[in-house]
Image (cartoon, rainbow, N blue to C red):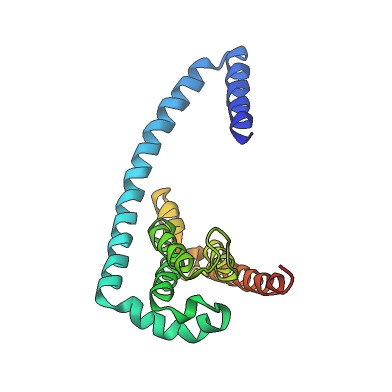
Amino acid sequence: MINYIWFLLIFLGGIVGLINGNGEVISKSIVNSCGNTVTFMIELAGIMCFWCGVMKIAEKSGFTEKLSKILKPVLKLIFKDAAKDEKALGAIVMNLTANMMGLSNAATPFGIRAMEEMDRLNPNKGTTTNDMSLFLVLNAACIQLVPTTIISIRAACNSVNPGIIIVPAIISTTVAAIVGVCSCKLLERYF
């Protein structure tokens, strides 16, 4: 449905622009925005490649294993079954770590691996467990210690201070994560 709405907005905007005699302005805007988009994507891809490499080094060096030992007491409190399995816990930690660093693109493979590991532990295949639901909530509302993607976007758009959003991001994502975990734990009692 949203595709139809977007198409309608773009189509009607183009028609109104042509009726008002702004066809040349529309054409120039399309060409300029396409060029700017390509430049922006190349800049963003370089930054994302760097951070994905950093996360791979963290995984290979054992940093995530050490981090999982630090996070294990907290994760054992909120995850019931997944915290008992090292593979599932390691994948959860990798996903949450990547999300905490603002690397949602790098977190996706770890999130898929975490869900596969939790599904392996699931006695009722095809049914979502409470741990899986909680993981999805934490994945969506993860605490952002360094929102690298947003900082990269702001830097690519020539922001005067791209890092100014770090403290508000930490506060808002922490509140979102706490509310998400509390909501999951409350709903676990009834469903």
